[in-house]
Structures are given as structure tokens and as C-alpha cells.
Length: 432
Image (tube, rainbow, N blue to C red; front, side, top):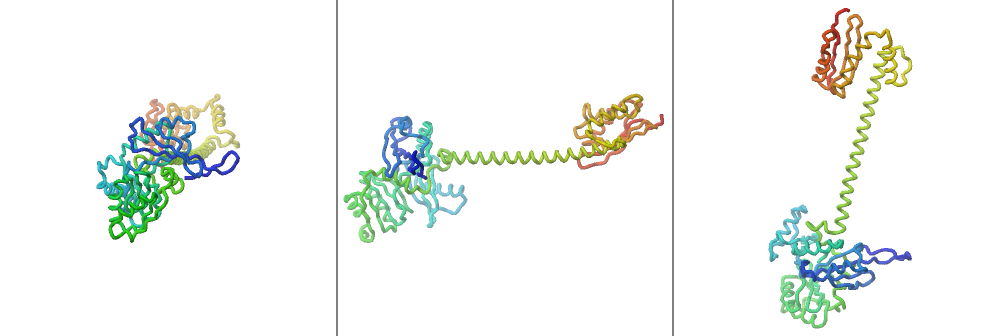
């Protein structure tokens, strides 16, 4: 977690980081108190202890600051299990099955967070009651408090050295962590039983103790008989504020994984930003695809327009071979037809309008088009080549001429790439 920022004078400073310690108490308890530590300097400082609702109303608390929640050790089970080399989905299922034998409740009611696999083929696993975590997250999220991550208290014990058992004595409550074995919290009265069992099955040769002389003697006494001289007990002074020391670990050595996994992955601020980023990415891809599709369609339409324009020029040249200058085809066609329509109007103009009327109003099909026109004045016959989508459209065109004096005959059809090319004769074919 980055702690670099700039103050009003331009000097680098550490931004305020809020660390909220969630108690073992259920979130349904309206009096359940959380602890709020502010990390704005070298040492974390406890600022508040009370309900989340009271915290949200404080002027010195901003939900916009980086927020980390820490789950107290009594609410979880922290252990190490073999990590099979499987795909992530199957690996999660297999590890959940391995954890099940250590649970006192049904595995369906437990949330399992899985850490990275170590060199020895084992992985840390933290299990806790799903309803408990769900209740606390729902309560703080309802107040606009969205954590960046949630960690377990046992992850904050200085246990970087995998060969050492770390013990932190906080009055009558001892926290312990032995990488590759287990971690948790135990009452000082029961520490001897728990830790002796832990050491009995371990090859650990170092014990690092944060506590007083009495705790150091207790640790030496709990070592298996005859093995005390084989282990080195490092006795370090306990920090004045144990919780503040744990909070400092959140900032100095961020744990390798958090609890916001699986069904809780979307509760964190970072996960929400990732979701928004994924949505933005998908939207960008869709938009780029639509733009590309429009460009391709535009190019296709431009090519089709150019092809139709060339066909129109060809048809115009065939109909009006004496024109030497074509300015605007539509206007030129209209002008030429208007000129032809002036008395004495040849029969060709009337016949041409009759032939084109069914193609235009109402249209037989949007894609029909006249390819060529031949008019035989001696027999008053038009021979047209027209492109249709299919034979049915050609037949609809032919059936539009019901005048027995000027019938339509479908002479032949040829298949083309995008439909058929029909040859149609309009007229009786007899000399007038």
C-alpha cells in the first residue's frame, strides 16, 4: 500500500490510512465496538473505539482514505495445507476439502481464503464463518465505508523467517504463528498445551518471543523434555501497544493475500475498481467493434454507390448517346424525359414509364434494378433485363401487367451472385 503523498507546501508526507479492527462479536450486536487506528505518521495511533455508526459520523474519519480491516484472531482458523498443482477453480475445491476436517461446522457455512503456494508445496489457508464476515462487511458498507482489503490478525505477526515460531504476548492473550503449521490466538492459561503440541510435531529450532520474563520462562517450560537445549529462544521486549504494533505491520509488510476472495471479492474498493475497469474495457471493445463495423459497411456502401453510378452512366449513354456532357444524372434524366414527353411524344416514353412503374411504386423489391432496355418500335415491344432477388419477385413484376393489349412474358432467367437476371418482353410482338 503506497503511503506517499504531498502536503500543501509540496513536501512528501504519508496520507492518512485507516485501520479498523473488527471484534469477534457478531455484527448484529448494535453495541459491538470496532477500533480505529490512524496511520499518518511513523507510529499508528488509536483514535476511536466504538460502533461503526459513531465512527462514520466523526469529522476526523474520511471513507475516501485508504481503509484496511483486520479480523481478530478468535474469529478465524489459520493453518497450512498441501497445495495441489491444479487449475485455480479445482485447486480451491481441493483445498476446501482438505480444510473441512479441521472445521467444527459445515464447510458450506465457512469462507475459505487461500494464499500463495510456497516452495515446499504448502499454502496458508484462513477459514472463518461466512455469515460473520458478511454481517460486518454489510454493516460498514451501508455506512459508505468500503475497505481496500481485509486481513487476519494472525497475518500481522512478524513471521518472515519460516524456521521460527513467533509468539506475541498481549496480557492474558497470546498470538502465535508458525509458518507451514498454524497460527492463531490462545489464552495464556492454555498456551502451554497448544504450543507444546505445535512444537512436538515440528522441526522448528527457533522461538521468537515478544513478552516479559515470566512469559519467557513459560515458553522454556513448555518445550518438550530434553529438547530445550536444541531450541533457541529469542526473548524480545513486548511492544507497549500490541495492537499498534500489529497495525504497523499492515503498512510495513503487507500480507501476501487478503480475505476478500470468492463471494466477497467484490466488497473491496480495489475489486470494485477492477470491475469498473473490466466494464470499461468491454465497453471500449464493443464501441471499437461497432465503429469498425460502421466503417466496413460505409466502405461497402461507397463501393456499391460507385458501381450503381457507373451503371447509371452506362444506361444514360445507351439511352442518350448524343449527350456529350453529364452533370447530374437524375436531373439530366428528368430533363431528357421531359423533352421526350413534349408532343409529339413517341410511344417509347409511355411504354418505358409503364415498364418502370411496378419497380418503383410500390417497389417489387428494394434491390431490383434494370440492367438493359431494348425497344422495337415496329412491334411496340420492350425487352428488359432486370435483376431480382428471386424468381418469385420476377413473377410478381410480370403479373403486374394485366392489359391483354400489352402483356408481359418472362422469357428466361439466369442466376447471378446476388439474385437472378430475368429477361422480360412487354408487348404482343406483332407489327402494329
